[in-house]
Length: 363
Image 1: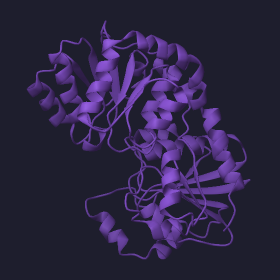
Image 2: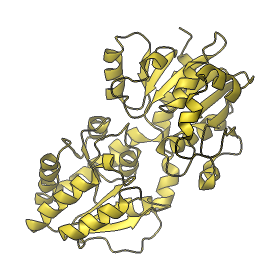
Image 3: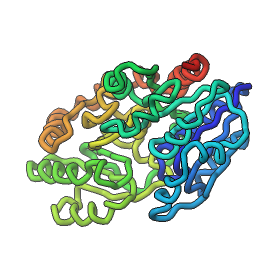
Image 4: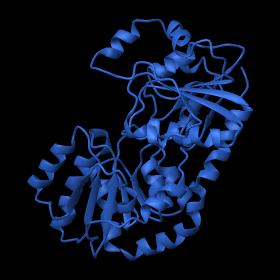
């Protein structure tokens, strides 16, 4: 049985990285071929624990975080932190699963006795951690486009692969069947699920909705999530006079019950690694219109449905307008998606993950 250690910064409900780590860990221990230990450096706890298999080990380090705490931790040499955090436990594979301190620490723990992997979610613009990446036996990106870019920018100096984030479709399909307490728009119902922060492009999306409303298109947008920009977005919606077009549903324990009832999923992001929310929508049979963030083109091409737009207001406006002018295309997309969505299943994604874990060798 191979022993795997995955280190990341936080393990909390709102962290997409920690949710992906949990999916991977639960699957690996279910195969009976791997023993998995998760090592969150800072925050740990809450409802996120409920998602973990009892067979997954967790070794939280500090269990809390406060502003400026990371600066104190950064003073300590990474090699020493590796020895302290990972300890004398012997692992076959060590994974720096998140950008920042987790990557730095795991990169410093090189040894002939284990394989080290670096996991890149959102692309490291400027390759600020280049020196760390070059120490790993392999870098793994969560989208093919980022892997191809990394190969070029690192001058092919180390093995690079990609592995899409796995999703347990059985769970989301079960949650999707739950009823909702709000009426779906009779025209076109759109939905978007994400943290309400600037990189998700929701301010731009609201301006687009205003333009479409002024042109008398009929539709509604469910915005699900919370975050630092949440209250500002509500105020902006009110100022734009689009409260009758936008419904803020806040943070939902089960967003899938809403997504499954929608006609179109909209991703307006400026930055993504590979959108898990888009993948979940496709598994629920809902086509996606997405900006050309990392993984966006792959999502549209692999599903063979939906629309890819540039990361600006005019392109997003034109893309949504095209759909609203020809709403029958949504039914065509959904029919096509009934077959292509199988490409996004857990089985398909985990096949690639196992290949990486089994066939990565020491450099």
